[in-house]
Every structure is written in structure tokens, then in C-alpha cells.
Length: 216
Image (cartoon, rainbow, N blue to C red; front, side, top):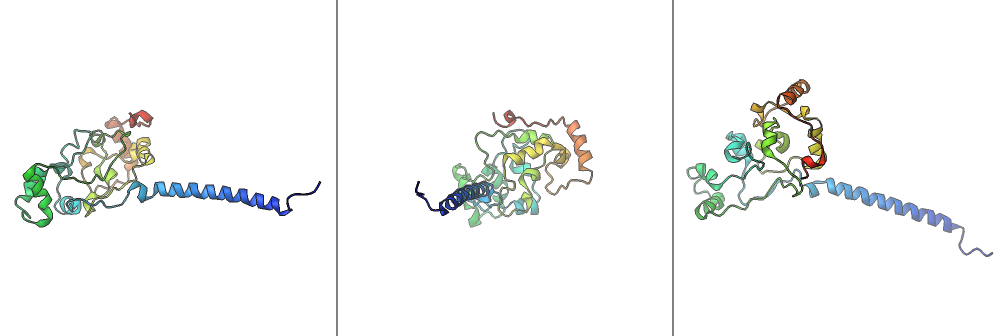
């Protein structure tokens, strides 16, 4: 029987299959890199705000405690954005006519909330309770990074599920004394493992890794 295909056809077919495998693998790797990049996670990307608020100045330079502005963080699942009245407690006297603060003054006059851009925006299918984490000894900087060093606020962690599970699987690595939760410059001691185990027992921390813990 006459041969319809040249001898090189087998090589071409093999190379074509190899090219398909390489292309699919490259696309998968590219997709993974995009999904983990700051383009997708918004990690380390400063957010523009209607008012250029600086945590570095307020929390770092002036030493204002997180709870002065985020008043519900210890007793609510939601760490509230500060009411305009909180801003005006100081700025009715200081920088009272600064042009950059006109949106704050307008909000106070009209009662209309400032449309801040969310920095930490979890999906609707994720449940997170700030007060539980605060009372269990998880510090602000553990999740939010050194906010006191941020001239404009950005999202410090990736907020990927793996990042949450790292702590939930081994909370002793991250827990700190409750009186240090709001200390932005807190550094884990050399005996963190022993301290962590002690605090886990004292604070009755349970390593929760089931899906229903966060996906309700």
C-alpha cells in the first residue's frame, strides 16, 4: 500500500503534541502568577482616597490609638470607619481651613458620609470577626502590617485562604498578650513558641480549620 504521509509526519505530530502540552502548562503557570500577583490580590498597592489620610502621621507620629477612630474593633465583627465627627474633634481646631480637608468639613456640614475606598475587602462568602481575633490576642499589625508606617494605607497580606490557615493551624506562632494587641511596634520574643503555647491555653484558643469556620 502506498504511503500517504511522509516519514517526517510522525515527528511533526509528536512536536505538535509537545507544543500543546507546553502551551497549556505555560498558560496554567501564567494564570497562577496573575492570580497571586498584586494585580489580583491588591497586596502592597496604596489606595487612593478622597482625603489623603496618613496613618503614619496619626498613628505613628501622633501616637493615636487604633481604637480612637475604629471604635467597634473590640466589640463588633466589623472594624468601623471613623465617623466624620471623630475627625472634627481635632480638625475643628487644627488645620481647620486646610483645602485638603474640605471633604471632611463638607461631610460634617451636610451629614453625608465620605466615600472612602475600602482597603480590606473580603468576599461576601467569607465571615470574619474582628472582636474575636482581638480578644484572642491577635495584634493589629499581624493582619494589617505596620500601618503606623504607611503614609497611604495598603493591604499588607494577600488575604488568600492559605494566609488565614497558616495562623488557624498554628495560632501559637502569632498570638501575643492582650495588652500588646494594639502595640504596632510589638515584636515576637525569642521564646514565642513557649509564650504562644501558654497564651493559647490561657485564652482558650482552638485551632479551627473546618470550612464552616469562615464560610457560613
